[in-house]
Image (tube, one colour):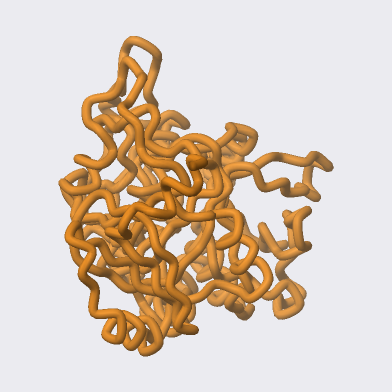
Amino acid sequence: MTTADAWSQTPATALLVLSDGSVIEGQGLGATGQSVGEICFNTAMTGYQEILTDPSYSGQIITFTFPHIGNVGTNDEDIETVNMAADSGIRGVVVAASVTDPANYRAAKHLDAWLKSRNLIGISGIDTRALTALIRDKGVPNGVIAHAPDGNFDLDSLKTAAANWPGLVGMDLAKDAATTQSHSWQQTSWKWDEGYGETSGGTFKVVAIDFGIKRNILRLLTDAGCDVTVLPATATAEEVLSHGPDGVFLSNGPGDPAATGTYSVPMIQAVVEKGVPTFGICLGHQMLALALGGKTIKMHQGHHGANHPVFDHTTGKVEITSMNHGFAVDADSLPDTVEQTHVSLFDGTNCGLAMKTKPVFSVQYHPEASPGPRDSHYLFKRFTDLMQSARAAA
C-alpha cells in the first residue's frame, strides 16, 4: 500500500464544504467546531503566523499553497494584530501536509496548540493545488470548515451554511477588526538578538486610522521618525484634526471598502481638503480612491501572497510586494486629478495612486511586508518627505 493509499483509508476528522455543495475531506487540527467564510489562497512561502494574525483576512478561510506550514512553530513575537489577545477574524486554515513538530530556535508553541488557543479551525491532508486551481478558474467560493475528532458531521447542515453565507460584498468588517479607543504607539522594528525596540517620540505627529492595522506598519512609522497616535476606524474628521497631525495614515483592513466608506469617506475627504499629507495602504488605499471620486470592484480571486510584482511608474522599477486584498480600485474610474502610480504585473490591476495637486498617495499592497520582501519600505520615507515639505511650506 502506498502512502497515498494509507492516507485515503484514514477517517476524515475535518471537512471543507464549498457553497456549490462540494465536500473535501481531510484531517482536523486546531479548534473543533465549524466556521463559515470566503475561501482564498495565499502564495507566500514564509510568515504563516503573521498571515494568520493579519486582520485583513477577517471573514476568510486561508488556503496555503506552500505545503510545509507549521514547521517553525509559533511564538509571541510574530503576531500582527494590535491587540495580541484578540481574534484576528480569520475563519479557518487549509494546509496540504500534516503539521510536524517545530524545528526552530524561536518556536514557543506547536501550531496545532496555537490554533486551539486562538479558536481557529484547520484542515490538513487535502490537495491544495487542486483547490487553488478551482479558485483561480471559478473565483473565490464561500465555504464551511468543520473539525470533529469523532468524524461525525451533519453534512446537510454544513452544505446549507455554506450556500447561505452572503459573502464579503457589502460587509463592513473594519469596525470589528480595529481598536475601539485611541492609543499611542512606541514600538520599533525587530532586530536580531535584540527583539523589538521602543521610541519616546518622533519628528512628525501622525494619526493612524486603524481599519485592522498590522503591528509592523506601526513599527515602520516609528522607525521613520513618526510620533504615532492610533484612532479607531470610526474616527471623525474633527477627532483626527484635533490632534494637529503632520500626516494621516489610512491602514489596511478587511471587508468591502464601499461598506466601510459610508463613515470613513467623509473623514478622508475632510482631511484631504485640509491639505494634510495622507498615506493609505490596502483598504486605506481603496477608501482613499472612493473619497477622491473613484470606485472599487470585487476581484475574481484576489491577490494574497508575498511574491507579487508591481511596477512603480514614479521610479520605473519593479518591486516584489506582499499583498492581501479581494477588492481593487477601478483605475478607469479615477478622476483627472488623480494619477495611477503603481500597477500589478500579474493582471494589470491598480496598485497605487497619487493626487496631482495635494500631498496624498496610497498603494494597494503592504509595504511593511511581514511577511514578505522589503522592496517597498521606501514608501514610508516618501510619506515623511511629504510631511517635511508641507511643514517647510507652512
